[in-house]
Amino acid sequence: MSELKGAKMEGSKVPAEEIKNPNLVAAIEKMQDDNTTENINKMIDEVMKAKFILPAKVTPKTEAKTTNGQTVMQQSTQVQFRLLENGNKEKFFGVFTDTDELFKWKDTQNAQKVVTDFDSIAQMVMDPQADVKGFVINPFGKSVTFPKQMVHSFKQQKDYMKLKNQTIEPGSPISLGEPKEYPIDLMAALINHFSTEPTVNAAYLRLIEQNGQKSYFIVVDFFGDMESTFDAISKVANPFLDDEIQLSMMPYSMDFAKNAVKGVEPFYRKEN
Picture 1 (cartoon, one colour):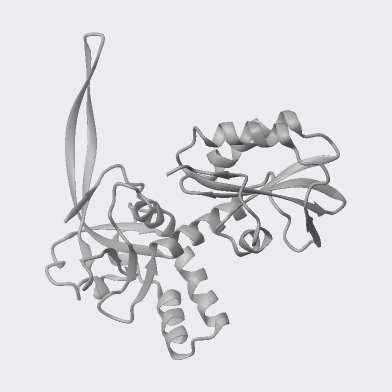
Picture 2 (tube, rainbow, N blue to C red):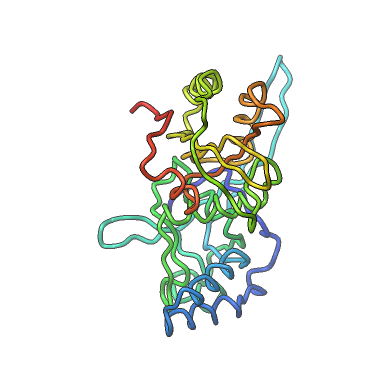
């Protein structure tokens, strides 16, 4: 068993016995029979929408928090997850589409069951304290393995589509290039900001024009929460923007961003 504390558990009130995921099961089978891009994307879409079952040990825990001589008793939950291990001793979460698949794993008949979703699994996979390399759907049946880097990429793409500000509008023509005048003051402010942010690995600058609006296009290689990361960048950048040039951002994990900065040196790279 591997212990993870404070994991977010979306949908955990849904009884595990009600989780079936017929659309995902069908999409996996179709993809494995016919490995086309369309079938792969359909399977991934179903993973994003699915609820999964994880075997776990959930233990109530009583804590006492004392401040200025006053103690408050608090009830928390400690969750321990059972992990899979491959031949290279790498650990993965085993997640299941239904209880029939779960019970193929030895000694899970009496295990406690946690019901969760892709976002929660991704959060746990990317937890720096968890030495986990990804997750496997139905590891004892028709299985699909999602390595950590792929989980990271899918999670950031999903989060990006939820954002409403400083993003690129899908479907509109985009002109991509370099700023005529390098924004030295903006870059200095961002470099200073990134140097205090351990979650940011690198950042790149391009100029884009969409629907007649020019924007500094910041591509950020980072891990962690996208909304808070981008909000912080926006606050730093705002004093250097005007009606003529605005700000757009995108995570480096997205294909458009990678292609946009191909061959471009980052203006910031975290020191090892």
